Image (cartoon, rainbow, N blue to C red; front, top):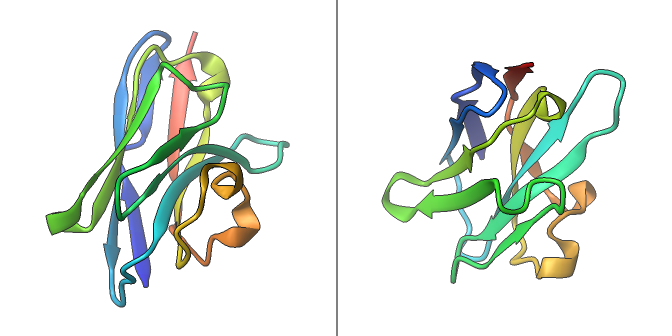
Length: 126
């Protein structure tokens, strides 16, 4: 499985960005795709996740209400729409896929995700 993340860039505080993550190669019927981020000097943290089957979503409290995760089954692509961006959202954003259909309480655990994309940098200026 290969994941290609794109859409990062420089945006002013309050602005918006949409990240994309295209999956190719072997796919699984029951999967969960997620977005994580890592700021300089900090640990990787969960942002959002979506179950491929059914579309259940789960968000970190820090982004809830500002971020929407969605999927396009036909394109094997997951999107992360980020609005009202803040300087503290600055990080490298990684998409990941789990072979499991995770439930809400486990969607934020990085070790449960099996494949990772290369990351895309989001910089929010104040």
